[in-house]
Amino acid sequence: MSITKHFDNIYSFLHTKFTPLAIQGLATLGFFLVVKNSFQLLSSFYSKFIAGGHDLSRRYGKGSWAIITGPTAGLGSEYANQLAQLGFNIVLLGRNAEALEAKEQQLRTLVGQSIEIKIIEADFVESTEEGFFEYIQEELRHLDVSILVNNVGTAIGTPMHSSPDYAALELMKINTVTATLLTKRILPHFLLRRHRSAVINVSSVNSITAVKGYSYYNASKTFLDMLARTLQIQYQDKVDFLSVRHGTVATRMSLYAETADSLTVQDAVRGALSRLGSVNYTYGHWKHQIYCPLYVAPVIGPKVFEATVNTITKQIARKMQNSESV
Image (cartoon, rainbow, N blue to C red):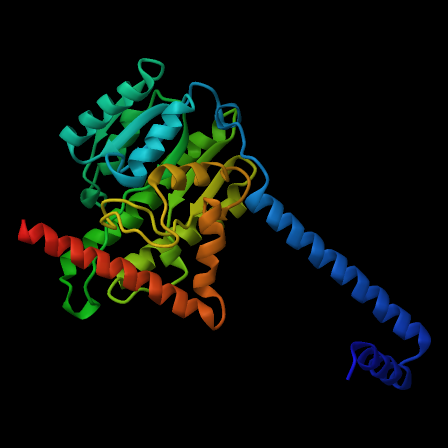
């Protein structure tokens, strides 16, 4: 049956069921729905792939401070690099004094003396201890903090039934408690600032997918994703919240795995910062914007995701085997 004949049959059927006026009304409604959906599709495409990012220094205040948790390696290190290059003063918040000092020297090599850098040593496993956040607040008291990057995180790659209780508790303290209470403590300051402020939660594509053996990690990343998205609703007049659902990134945690969607930390962070202030969640770089939604697509999603996970698992196993044989 031709398409024309098919539509003729539909038109004839409608004429037997509705008055001409009702048919005109339905046609008008259908037209507006098509226009609305087309506009939403084009707007989404524009915001994800075409629109440029904000001038972050101007938006959040020139000479203000950015806090990065877990800033000595991987994504955290690169967030520090790129925010420093944009002119923000940097607070390096982590647990290893030697690594923090090395990162400070790296930043000095990168940007010279053009910014200020402050080190705060704190072990996030102790985030539920009395006085933990009061100490950090005191260290920040005289700083005009404008950006908080909740990056610090850890993972447990074993099934729940065989992982020790202490490991699960430590993961929750590091991945969720730290981000939640640090954000809570910094919010009153953000609400009093003349400029806007921002909170970036470094989540993961694992917040919307499931990886066998990583139940705690996946759940913690889902928590960070939802925390940013719900806080955006309440504080959007003064604070930009952004959940970054990073896909595969070549970091120490992934043993620098290479997959079809893998990115360097430079590209991953650059893509995330380009969306700050425009959306409340993102996959960041255009490659992840295209690839990561495939993981939850009907039918093909599980197969694409399984293939990616298998690739990473095999690469990690091979690299670990090679390191043991050296």
